[in-house]
Length: 252
Image (tube, rainbow, N blue to C red; front, side, top):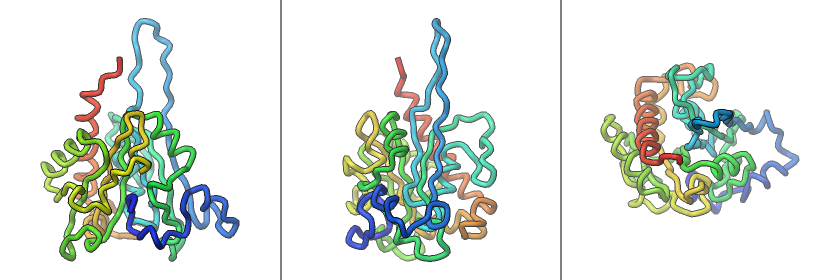
């Protein structure tokens, strides 16, 4: 499936470029894009400054796969309500998201992760050692009983998957290896999360009940202001897994 809650056969657009070229759509009304690339500056000849090594992605944010925009920001180190650094002492990560802004019909804007060719997304992931894509799925797509709050952990990076599974389970979140559900495994080389310098990344598929439980009011307008403890438990676990991974990736 390439990481998403819509069957490939139902896709209206094969790539982001096709969607952007559709003159019937208006950016800012139908869809939006948000991203942040942090400045790199090192003028110290005797030392070096650490750089961002991990990019956070939400290819189906806004009203397409609800909650993934807010999770993208939280994991990147920013509060989704005001974009203030959270926690204040960092770290922060680069991020990119594509968001459906319509009141209805956002599923039409879904582009599979293998079809993601947004130039900023490609630039950010292509310059990163790691990337993690955030997605939403139904319990049926995850092959789980109704109302199951779970996340399927996939992607091509075995080390990243292992760190994510360990930290999420440790935090009390039901985390499952997505290898058991091939349609949600996110292991295609062309998946945007795997188009990193190492050719591998991670993908998180959160079931609808899990995402719904993270917000007191589950609407695009209100999610950012009504995050529950589960939201922060989840984002902290993912951030810790990223720190675990980066700790074994020294940059010479």
